Length: 131
Image (cartoon, rainbow, N blue to C red; front, side, top):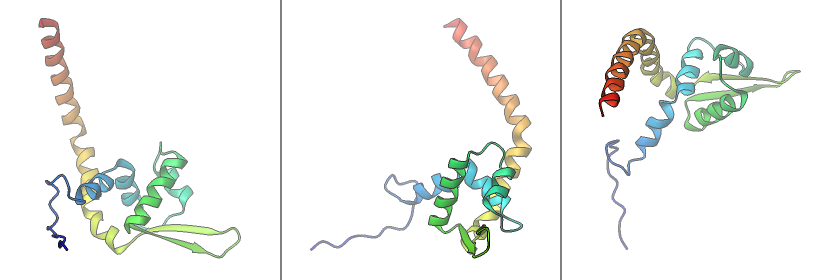
């Protein structure tokens, strides 16, 4: 009988499951949902209003995946009407500083990146015309 060898996580390896974790936590709606939930638990409709442009289906899928991964906790309250709230879990709170910094960096770097895009596109269009 062969023994399964457990390797330490290394996202550079093709077979490492941590790649799937990186893909999930790096998704736009996951990042924005986490930052939206940083101050207080929120109901689905409140999250959807905060994340302009997210569809109901996409938000539902995002919240389910985040709950499955243990990033958020879903609480149901036996009220009329039924109330459901989402909050960051301890695991989600441990990730929050990173995703909050990523959101802030994207906002701060936006103009610089757009300027680089314009310069690159200008250079690339000249290259295509010469070819």
